[in-house]
Length: 331
Ligand code: ADP
Ligand code: MG
Image (cartoon, rainbow, N blue to C red):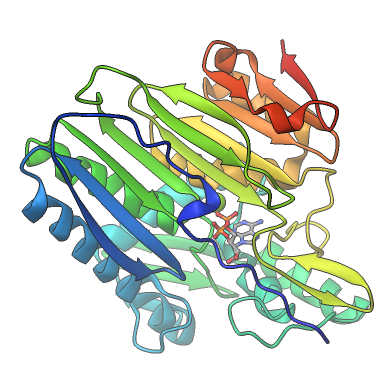
């Protein structure tokens, strides 16, 4: 079986550098299976480095694979004394599960593991195994009770929301420290803080799902921009490709016709959870939920780029998409 996992690196969403006279400092690190950068404008070295350490600490706490993480203990023992972060993450994850009718569900871990994602033992499970895991996932829950995180019936994996949660926490920390402008990039999760010192908007590229450059650029004020795609982490078996975003209802990699979804929202944790959920839900359902929630999104299929209407003024397509994709704005 051939394994091809394209690691999400900074280039997943590339940042267009703009001229600025204001000095900036960039801290680099790697955690949550991705590389990360934090750029703070002005005198930002200490704040940027503190952010990078925060990202590493959250990874140590939330990793599903590290044997000594809080989440690993939760999965092993069924309950664990919840840290503030674990408690708020569970609350956020359950909220997103509710509003997406279970398309986003952190209790999906038995299925994620069955396909070999996170463990590295990639394989195509048989129908019975999948049906059994679908039932386990459907019957399981995660809650916080009396300061304890409790999992009923299965196992949890915060991989679909942890980077967004971390980006949001880092952004809030930078604001508390008085950073006027910063950009946090955690492999496909971008969170901008404040306004760029030169007065321009932040320009954030959306990677082409086929791996060649970008399909376009979003010009935005402070925002979270998060991408989930089937081209990011996957394996191949018998000539077929199996990616890492699992539909909890079917037990198979989501097959909604989308190859990439980018969500633009104020809160990076919400944007991260929704990007995974939207990928599972498909364009129609996702667009109607996006409108209800007041968030924006970019949906990419093999031949179409569809954007919610709130992005009409922000999006500039790349010239390379001409003749390859049709661009549509959703009403
Ligand atoms: P990435 O982590 O590659 O940036 P996502 O945010 O879309 O991409 O999260 C995908 C990860 O979330 C998977 O690797 C898996 O750990 C977990 N996951 C997969 N399917 C779901 C789902 N339906 N709901 C919640 N988490 C999921
Ligand atoms: Mg996500």
